[in-house]
Image (cartoon, rainbow, N blue to C red; front, top):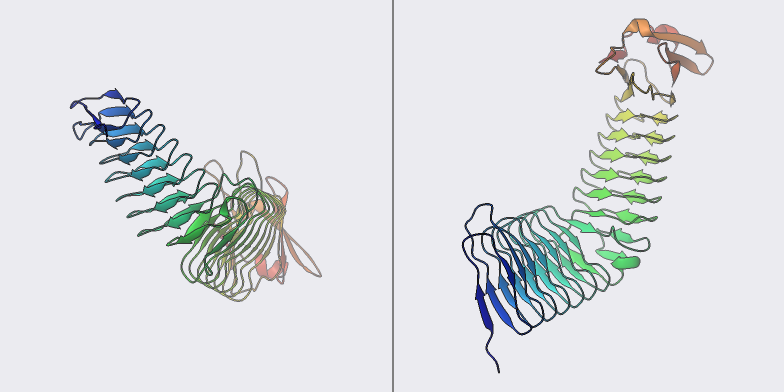
Length: 368
């Protein structure tokens, strides 16, 4: 059996190519800003990155690559590779084959790509994508994210049951994750009893946080977001979204689109932003935000369904260029409630359950 070819770098920035056989490469450098580039080419190679910012390519063959310190980029390439991030914040890509990937000490981004991969995040807050194939994904310590952004079809993720299906999620086993990035399609996400973070990306997504203080971002599309128990942060983003906080003191923001928002029990904050939005605070002392921007005047026409005088508060905020004052609003009443009009733009906020006399005292309205 032929011995490995041993290649050693210098203390500076090196560009090293291996041979067609099995290589052992040591890319030495100072712990500063040196950048080594190592390409193992063919053969079953072993590559050690050193203490700088390294880019390490295994090439063809079953390779072992160690990143060492600082930010490293590690690419396994073809073959069944073993890739280790080390002590830096790393980006590791397995490539084709059944790869074993370990992130290391800090927040890493790990991609298995094609094949049945074993990926362990290690310490730090990691983002892990198994890619195609039935993968085993272990988050490790830290607040870790599953990443299914590249899935060709929608995925269903249930952190409470530890299940995953659809697209790149089919056949995956995972543990140690608190959230997920999902696909461009209509995904279904369910959290657990911990504090979860879900980013729905594109598509008409359904996201249920369950218990815990959750962060749910629907992304573009017509999404359904349900916070569950806990003090949740719920963002509709683009699209006509339905957002419900349920129990807890929730912070709900619709952003663009004609959104329907319900706070549920608790002292909730609801912000419509762009579009014609319907806001229901539910039980508790709720705050309804009406944000003016003088450059595009995107307030539109919003509705508060259940305003409770003396309990709830309307907050009207200006911009860096225009301060809203009581002189900028007018009140008109009908049998269902009171219409507040912002005179600089003509946009309206209809308040059910309150008279013009009650609101025009400004006891329940604040200007920021």
